[in-house]
Length: 189
Image 1 (spheres, helix red, strand yellow):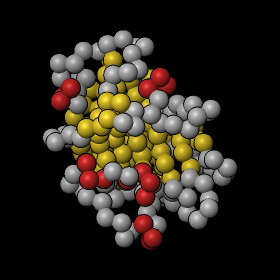
Image 2 (image 1 turned 120 degrees about the horizontal axis):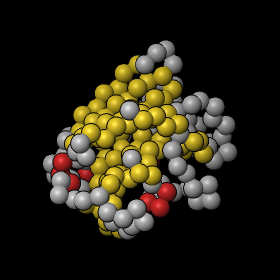
Image 3 (image 1 turned 30 degrees about the vertical axis):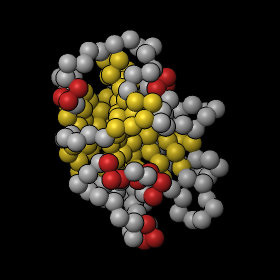
């Protein structure tokens, strides 16, 4: 497994904890990754519990990142390393193991959802301080596509207090523009 540390972009709030991810691509079809994140940060506040998200469908969870802490993975299969225009996958997981999954065809304009997609996840205590959030995705629905996988890993922690900024983190971040939908900064996996 490869290990990467996430860089923190706190939008004004100091964040001192380390967050990292380990990932592995097996046979171009199985993608496994684990985030290691402080327990105190990856939890749902009481005021967020009244919001209903569906644990059985991906499409019904639009806006998950706005209401819950989420860990995100963006994946893109390219035949040319400079082709940033091809569709990519956006996957999110919350502390309640709620998912959001879509294919982005045109950034912020055209999305499609998956009807049949296999994801397994587990959230477990790593030690007294950290949680390990593990996910395995079956990418065989992309079988036949040629090329290499590119991607990035992100984290969004909504603020705990009104008026406080949210915390954003990523393996690769554009410091000029806080935006996760930037395929040009995806790295080859």
